[in-house]
Picture 1 (cartoon, rainbow, N blue to C red):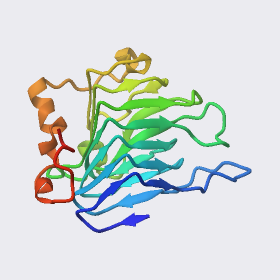
Picture 2: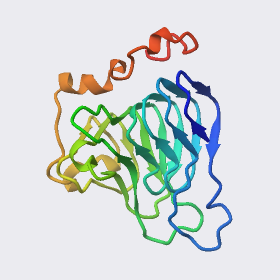
Picture 3: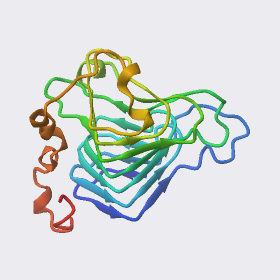
Picture 4: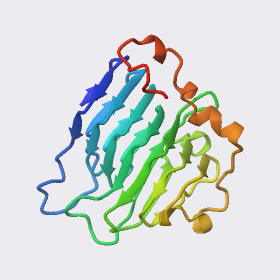
Length: 223
């Protein structure tokens, strides 16, 4: 599905790409379940299912609450300015994935110093099927290694997790729990933010310019 309109609210909808369901052999190919290019879009209790590039968080300000997102290769990617809150994120490469092969959960494509693109994961659970190493994320695109931003706060992590491999992006983990939250094997340049610094990302004001003026979003959805 290609979402280009702004001020969209979706609740209880499953977006699924079935490309990998019946393959006899496994190929890593782009197979999006949804592309979101509109501004001020919100998703509540929705599911996004696929393997590679499941959720194309292309551009605009987006809010995901209590959603389920599944994939195995860059399955949350793009240059959106988005908060994912209380979501379940499952690393799974589908039925035919080669044993032991890993992948990235997120791939952010910030393009400039003025770009507010960031993926913020707040009180989320990251899990998996136990097959392959799941990396939390990577930079995506020609300029993203300097401008991409990933914030993981108070998430619960169960799979084996690697870090990221780019030195010039902003990557933060704070207050996370579970066996996958052990940061001893993370890359040494993972950043630390104070509570005040984190608030600019995890507070709903990060994406809220104009959201409250849109009447169809429940008034309590940001509390």
